[in-house]
Image (cartoon, rainbow, N blue to C red; front, top):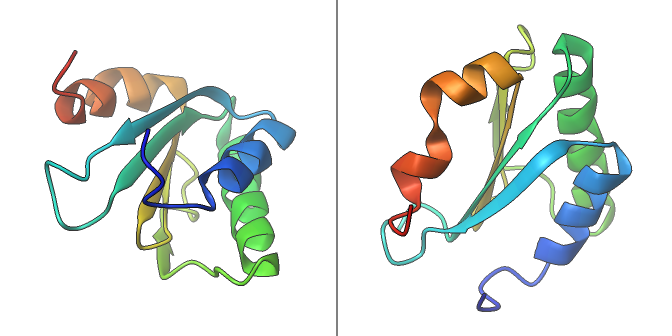
Length: 109
């Protein structure tokens, strides 16, 4: 994996620290100019999805990279946090299996 987003290890560690499940990093830099990486992970329940999103935003802000935008925190089914070069999707398992983002973006799948 190239070093297009040097803060990626910190972001992944923040997800692991809050016990996000099934963390998948997808390099989409050759497929879109919108972002370089997408991270897809799961939360166990509505509160967990929200807690993951909040923890990631706090951690990244603490290193000088606040989110550009976020959405979905209200319902907690699918939260998205946009850091520019990396977009994080935090989904409950049912939504993740329904939308299958990994398959949509990973051309090797």
